[in-house]
Structure formats: structure tokens, C-alpha cells
Amino acid sequence: MPRIFGDRNQLETLDLNYNNLNGKIPKSLTNCKELQILNLGHNQMTDTFPIMLQSLPKLRILILSSNKFYGPIWHPHSFFGFANLHIIDLSFNDFTGSLPSDYFQNWTSMKASYNKGQEIFYVRILIFFISIDFSNNKFYGEIPSLMGDSRDLIVLNLSSNNFAGRIPSSLGNLIELESLDLSYNELSGGIPQQLTGLTFLGYLNLSNNQLTALIPQAKQIGTFSKSSFDGNWGLCGPPLSKNCERSPLPPSHYSEESGDSGLSGFCWKAVAIGYGCGFVIGLMLGHIITSRSPYLVLRFFV
Image (cartoon, rainbow, N blue to C red; front, side):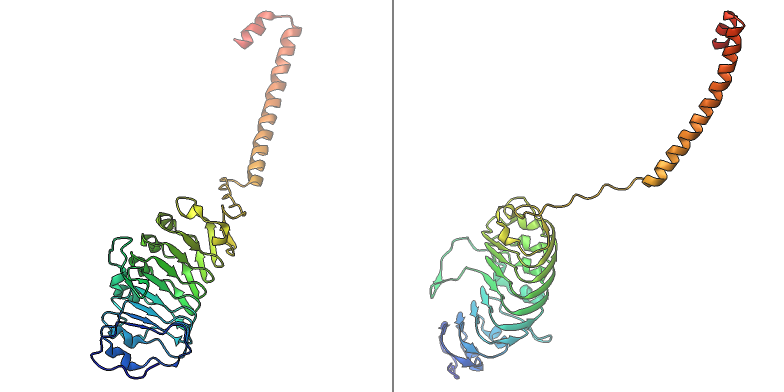
């Protein structure tokens, strides 16, 4: 890769995809203030995340996929810019670390509203296509809830990482989302009901996590096949063959044993009283009848 990019150059697109480039990204690339598209995918480059590129005010597309980049993509004391970024593809590298919420607060172009279907192409790439692909890395921690602020996001792929915790319900705010892949992570808890409102969602993969509970059946989520949910031992309900267990009935105030013993004690006392009363009344009736006094019988019962 060229080591020197001069000042005041008018370079807008740099596409070096599918070559055998190695080494690091030259710092002089920050001189390309008009650069909008940088595609270095499918090479042999070995470097840390090029945080310096955030100084490029017009950069919209950054593709670093299938290289040997490594380490975190942020530093605690550095500002994470890229305000105009529409597409970022870091897939198939060795990036690691967590994803602070600050990332997505600064990506303001992903929050802007565009008319669906607008077509402005730069090197055969739809500039209004908004995508985040961090798949096949070593990211960990929770998925930031502020990712749900990127309302015009069309593709979100965080698969094959080590993300844990719950799926943020805020992802239900991604109203333009067409593809969501969170497979092969360590996500837990239930599938948020809010995801059923993603009416444009055409691809969903939540497989091979640690998700639990009933799969939402309403609207879009209920249309996907079992392959979207396989590999989650705790998920149940259609389209999986595993049925959800019904919650057991709440126990009564008395246990079965104590209830039975209480009831039998009550019956024993009632029977004893009944036998006693019956015995006394029987003796009296017998005496009256043997004495042949019907009047006394009538008098006794009245």
C-alpha cells in the first residue's frame, strides 16, 4: 500500500479489495480529506484499528474485513468520531474488547432519516445503505442499548463473538432493519417482544446462544423457521418442536397432608357427636313406642 498520500489531494474512493497487501495503514491517508470510501477488505494487513481515520470528515464507508487487524477499536481517552459513517465492516479479524455506548452516540448519519429506496451509487455501493458488521471477531460484553438509536440501520451483524447479557429491547427501534444476525454468542434471557415490530425484517438468526422462554409469535418474528432459533436450550414454542411447560398451579394455604389430616379430624368429631345424639334419641323413642303413647311421640318432635 502506498506510504505517502500528499496534502490537498482530491481522492474520494480508495478500493484495494482482494489483494495481497500487508503491513499497516499509512498515517498519511489522513491527508485525503475528500475520501468517502475506503475498502481494504480481503488482504493481509496487520494493524490495530485505524482510529486516526476519524479525522476524515467525509468518510462514509469503511471496510476492513478479512484481514489481520487486532485489539480494541477504542481507547478510553480518545474520542470516537466517524460522524458520517454509513457502512462499517470489521468482520473476520481479531478485534477484541467491549463496545461502549459512545460509539453509537457519535454515528449521527446512522440516525438520520432518508427516503427508503434513494439510490446514489459510489463504486457500485448504495450510499444510503447503512450497515454494521462486526461478525467473526472476539468482542465481548453487552450489546449497547444505544445501538437502537441508529434508526436507519438496515443490516446488523454481530455474530460469532462473545457478546453476553440480554438482547436490548431498544433494537426494536431499528424500524428499517432488514437483516439481524446475533448468532453464536452467549446472549441470555428472552427474545424481546419489541422485535416483533420490525416489519421490514427479512433475515433473522439468533441461533446458538443461551436464550430462554417462549419465542414471540406475533407479526414478523413468528414467520421465521426453526433454524433462526436452533441451539438455544431454553427456547420453546413454534417453530421449535419443544413445547413450553405450563407454570405449576400455586399451592393452597395448607399442604395436602395437613389438609387431609384436618379434614379427617373434623369428620371423626362429627361422627362421634352424631352417634352419641342418635343413641340417646333412639332410647327415648324406644321407650315411648313400647309404652304405646303416640301423643308423646308427636309432642317430642313438635
